[in-house]
Length: 250
Image 1 (cartoon, rainbow, N blue to C red):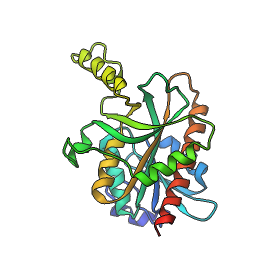
Image 2 (cartoon, rainbow, N blue to C red):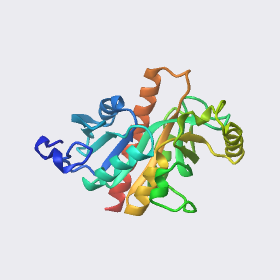
Image 3 (cartoon, rainbow, N blue to C red):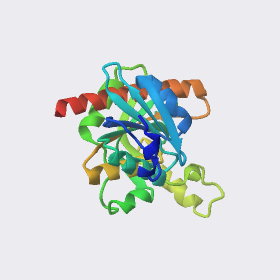
Image 4 (cartoon, helix red, strand yellow):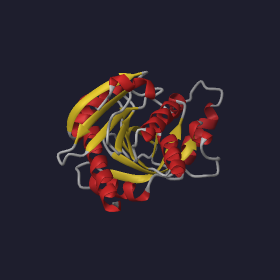
């Protein structure tokens, strides 16, 4: 999967000697080996400059990459751009989110159909009046497969931000602004908030690639084991959907 002698060919990621066209993106590098094992047979991993990349091979022999992005749009955009350079065509972010809607509880899945762009990175790629949206076919396929599972699945608009603790703005000079903003998004039907999807969707849109996002709603009631089990399920849904959409287009 990784050719150590060619590491200089990537600015940030480990050099990739792979035929994979599908990548699962997750924030935490510690999740990479677990998700790689969830989607197939792991074939090795390597880390460089804060990024961890693993390759796994599905039961029918398809190579899939799992790559950590760190937290937020800037580091996600670097990983996505360099994975595109390596030949990846389809990206699915499998990560966590915070619920905005009262009816979406911890342990349930959210599939983004577009982002409220409260981040900075997506603005480097698209002007503010442009929406950032995932690939329709890929998103539809993920929803279809996720609904076969045991967890409730909520497709809809999500929120993407740069400031994690803006969710609890007490003490901020703009605390009132943020409280009104959260209330407005809840009233507008925005489902959940996370920190990477807008950058991913924007890059995929301008480069002609496929991207989607499936998120696990979390709070302090979920154990680490429950979180990893749910993310593993989400990764399996994502890979099955990505490979099916890719096969249908060939």
